[in-house]
Length: 132
Image 1 (spheres, rainbow, N blue to C red):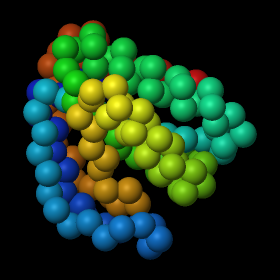
Image 2 (cartoon, rainbow, N blue to C red; image 1 turned 90 degrees about the vertical axis):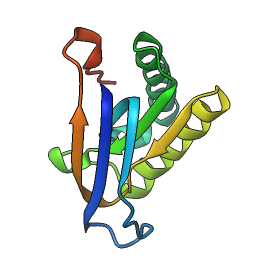
Image 3 (cartoon, helix red, strand yellow; image 1 turned 180 degrees about the vertical axis):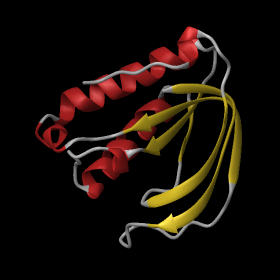
């Protein structure tokens, strides 16, 4: 998870055909960007994964004094990957829980390689790794 003064993306290459077409470039300010990777094992432990994900996102947002959260799939960097539909449903669940709690939530286009632009400050709670 990275707190970003500014974060932006532009869709470049669609890698999963079953997901929505996206071409719009977007920019955000003062947001927590969660680079999320769901593993195959997570599919068998859905409830604890959902709970920990939302809890960690709320925690890091509070520590950085923001209510803006961006969910970004980071699955292409690991050998163990959950099915794309599972990961997307996890994102949708987290988004709904966070919105219900008063957060502003966005998801980067799912199933795309994106050009990313990140401006992140250099203090310890601006970059946090959590594994569960």
